Amino acid sequence: MPALGDPETMLKQVQHMVRDDGKDDRGIRGRLYLQMKTFDIAVIGGGPGGYVAAIKAAQLGMKTCLIEKDKAGGTCLHRGCIPTKSLLHSAHLYHLCKRSQEFGITAENVGFDFLQIVRRKDAVVNKLHNGVRSLLKKYGVELIEAEGRLASPDRIILSKDGEAVGEIQSKNIILATGSCTMRPSWIPFDDKYVVTSDELLRMEDLPSSLIIAGGGDIGVEFAGFFNALGTDVTIVEMKDSILPFEERDISTILKRTLVKSGVKILTETTVEDVTVIDGKVHAGIKVKNANQEVLIADRMLVALGRRPVTANTGIEELGIELQNGFVKINERYETSKAGVYAIGDLAGPPLLAHKASQEGILAALHIAGKEAPAINLHLVPRVNYSWPQVASIGLTVKEAEDKSYEITTAKFPFTASSKAIISGDDEVGFIKIVADKKSGEILGVHMIGPDVSELIGGLSIAMSFEAMASDIEHVIFPHPTLSEVIKEAAHLVGGKAIHI
Image 1 (cartoon, rainbow, N blue to C red):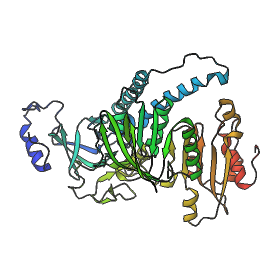
Image 2: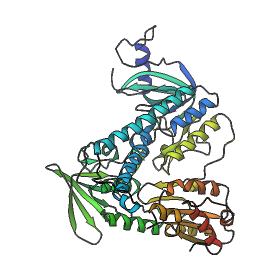
Image 3: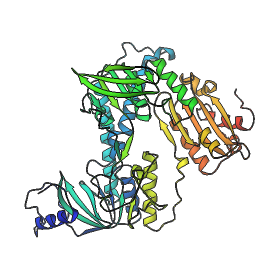
């Protein structure tokens, strides 16, 4: 059969191939879905937005299928959030073992097995993947392991290995095709020496040196992991700070901590050219107001962001409206074509798994005719799992000032946290609250320090209810816990903290 082309031609080809007994005359492997199979909701893309949307739709009593060309769980589970956090956890345990004498524990000849770190990462991913598949089965979601392409607002062509294998019809379609790594055409990606995070996660050897192009979330997390295991790491960032969209004092502390641990960080620096010579990456870089120089390393990670997946989806052919490259949606997550919805990375930033999951739930609720509150994108929490961790929600100081708020800020350090002192994590870090000076309403919270990823959720709840700093000031937090810094910072907004 010819490669994928016009959807109508593909449909005729599929119809011709299907015998009365439903078997494929031409030996296409895998299940063949007859073109008249219908659903209430079909979801294209099985990431944290898509599979959650499918489960919610099924829970609401709608006949649902999930179409995924790779593995249920998507990028987050297989090439992003989960595997990277598993690697970081192993690296942090190694770091703690090397510090064990501080805590009165003797651990001689501390080392690591890189292949076992990789195997554990794979085991974690496989366990969660099986869990997702079990949930889909539990709630009656039909998982179709094929590529889905829109033929019309209610028809999807299915294909495998570039060949059409069937068609389904659905009253509603949710697009959740996600995003993929940016691969600038001028960079000679070879998936061995010059790679994206996708390829780096599949490696089975530890490079002795690594250049990371991009000082955002992905670049910083990988820098921390490889540095902890002894790799010589250099971050090249074109902006004037790493994690450039976080509060400047947070970025400054994180940079200082990474540099102290041995990571080289070049800001206001661009990568001009990349070549591979005798198994080594040569990266020509240009530092602001300086001459070009060349960095040499075993590998280069290009972490310059992600872009929405729209190619080979039928989105553009169907005339679905785009905005800045993302699918344009209304408050119900419906696209410019009635009955077709879009969620997650495909529908725009922030490109975060938890935002995609919530959008999937809301889209399913809207389709079912249920009331559903809109997402306030300013209240989507952000986390970077560097060490120390970074977590934030709401407005930065600049964003609040740009919105004409008269603000007050309060900052409480982890150096005054008894739990941080107990765990030996009191050297750096703080919680910073940005509040409306007149009302005391919390507009933003920004943290850097130990396990702040576990603290930001509580602030998400508080800010969703438009909490004032005075509300938190009178909440009782357990002692000794890291969470007490939240109460202390709230005290600071209206007056003075107790423990500084």
